[in-house]
Length: 336
Image 1 (spheres, rainbow, N blue to C red):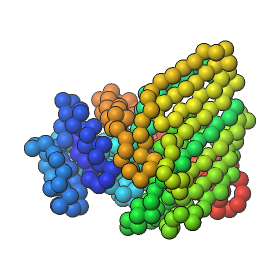
Image 2: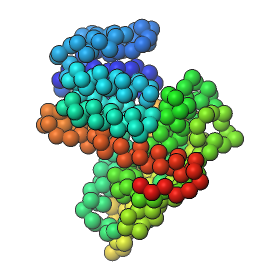
Image 3: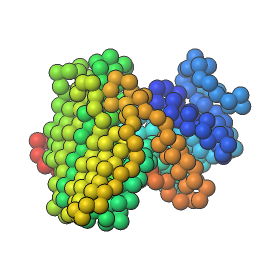
């Protein structure tokens, strides 16, 4: 399968590494970027075309799919053009800067008959896969409580970069840029809450337009309660953590490692501790889960099935984030 990459900024490294790993099955046909200097600096196969024109992808009938790594506020336009040209799309999170634009993107791809997947690689970590199976199989019983803690660190220099943490380019701050991975995984495990009450603010640690600290309470349809603690103002940065309480046991997912125990004493362990990019080094993580998302995306194209990280499934977390911001702005509970 011939595939293109659109965008070659900071987030592109694990994608290029994944493509190299899968080079026996995938051919990197073209890389598109705005900067010729950036294009020249990337190590690519000799057969890969370097271009500053998206048209070189759109007009090539041999290219079946594209990975979009451009800033969030460009996703809708680029994905729409790719979809209308019949190209399947894997897009870096988030889908777009607003729920409305994200919904438009999903609808356009479905109407065009192309697959849309999102790089929510936390779903594909070994520990997360194991916990999803435990929950889906009912091994731990019914959910009674859930918490997600994303206490990361970003220095002010991170937000001094043009566009970082702005509503116009990123769509917000810690929720849509950092916490979105953990929140997406939380919803895969718990389902959607039906009520949200949240407070969001910009701490004294950062000068930025959007939020860097959020606290939220969740209510689920079955009566279970949940909490969210998200920030990029926690020096030096700590591993994200999901804790779930069930009628038949508990499960904790932290930094790529699962520990679960049933009330009868049966224990479960999966995964291994790993770096997650929670500190000043944004790219301090391996690319295994990125490769798994890409492999799943390609398999879905070939089987005409749905990717595990489909665009429609990714709408859930954007709905939750929008509800938290709405709750904070209004000072009241939001019903989903």
